Structures are given as structure tokens and as C-alpha cells.
Image (cartoon, rainbow, N blue to C red; front, side):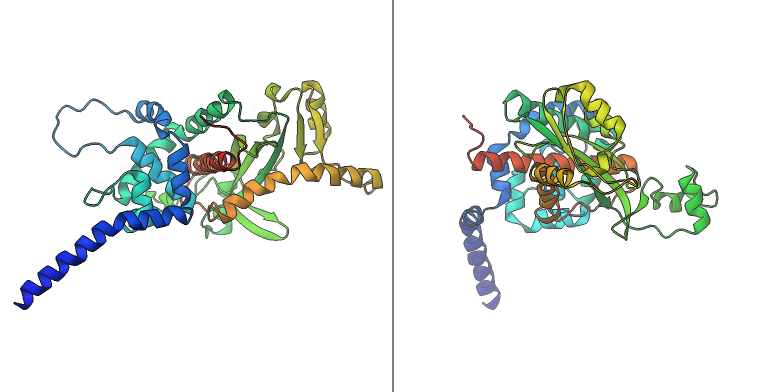
Length: 356
């Protein structure tokens, strides 16, 4: 009898939780679940052709074995990972635990959830083919086609993206800086050492990792282009790659780190209005007029800080758990894409983009 009562109680509890699911999801929507807006405003099917072509494997000789995972489901899982800064293991756990995540992925109770090794393998395939760049550019082309970008000016800046710090001997670090791998490292040790990341000091604080160099549309704060380098690369190095003929007739804002005679000449040659901050030199400090102009320029240039602020706060900062430049480019590229997806939905919500 006791066993029967326990069984009936368990069935009743299950029924309550099952029928309560829709109410819980509705409550999540009322609490501004960001994934609801993404699912509503973004047609993720636009990415399917790229994902299928890039991840296509040799045709299966037999229908036996596990059915391949849907590429859109896996791609959306990586969006969750970057939006909430989760490890692969945490991603599997959180999808299993959170209704908002399973709803975004289109999974229902009883359906199989991919394990963390599947997420790792999918991301490795993206990184190996450099697919994150194609995905970013595909969405950027959509923004261009829809006339979303203001295209009155751009802002460029860079932020440091940290990775787990390496504990190497001084001699080992010297070899790594010279582009060599210490001969005494076996394969197992090499697999756990990031020889592409570099140390850099900013405001007296040391950081180890990479840099995300971005160019944003000053009218919408959407990222229009980016480059990834080691952290020790000066902010201004990718300037020539980020600024080109497509910027002709617009203005360019940047802080004084980008100020140089070469950059000034490039902007003039391209017909771009130079709004780079002036900087003092050994000959003397800035004049009052230059300081006043810098303050005026800052009103626009500071907008790029909102991008990094969103990544720091709403995306729980970009901290990489990967090793090597190829994987860093993938993770940072996906983070830039996720920011654009979120910013796009925000612009719609603010009424700055009209949708059908």
C-alpha cells in the first residue's frame, strides 16, 4: 500500500510539473528572458547553408549509428555559451537544467540533449574552417541589405580578452616569444600550453591573452568589422585592415593610441573625416583648443565603450577557456556576432529599426 501511494504521489507531482511548464515559460518571458527576443527577431535558418556546407562530411555509407545533430541547434547552443560565458561542461548542465535554454534550442522534455563533447567538437569544426568569420559577415551583409547601418561614421577600438595564465620558466617564455616551442615539452604538455597568447600591461596591470579590435557603426553601435591579435599587439596595428574605401565620405573616431602621421595620411587619401584624438608629445602638452576638440570627439568615440560594457556585464565578459589563436579567433568572432544579434533586437525594441 505504501508503495502504491508513493507511486500515485509521484505521478501527481509529475503531472503538476508537466502542466506547469507553460506557466513557467510564460513567467520567464515576462521577466525579459533575452533568448525570447533572439528567437523572435532572428531567423537562424539564414545560417544553415553556411553551417551545412562548411561542416559537411563524407557521405555516410550506412544509415546505422547516431543521427547527426542539427547544425542550427548546435549553433544556437554556442550562442548561449558566448552570451552567458559558459564552459562546455556548464553548457550541457545548464541546458539540462534551464527551461529557457531548452525552449531557445527547440528541445522538449524527453528529447536528447547533446553532451559537452559534442559542443566541443562542433566548435572545433567551426574554428578549423574559420567559419566564425563567415557567420559574422553573413549577418553583417543582412544589416547592410536592410539599410540598418547609419553609415555616417565609424569608431575603432580594442579590448583585451584574457585566457588562463601560463606558468612557464623564463627560458621557455623567451623561446615562445621567438616563435619556438621548447623542445623538452612532450605532446601532452604542448596541448595545454597557449603559445599564441601574450602578456601585456595596461594601466600598470598585467594581462595574458588576446585582443579584439573592432570597428563599429557610430549611428547604431553595431560591429561592422573586427580583427583578433595577441594581446601585446598595439591597438593601432590593424588600423589599415579595418579602415578602407567603404568608409569614404564618412568620419572615423578613435582614441589617441591611433594617432600617427601614417594614419592621418591614409584617412586623407581615402576622403575620411579624421576624428582621431590628438595626443601630446615630447615637444609639449596639448593646447586648450586641442583639449576642447578631444572632448567634443569623445562624445562619439565613447559609444564604443558601450559595446565592451555590454560584453563585460550582459555577456559576463569574454574570458576564453581555449588554447591557441585559431580557437581564440573562433570564440571572439562568435562573441562579436552574439553582441550584434543582441544589439539588433535591442534596436528593434527601441523602434530604431522597422520590421515587417
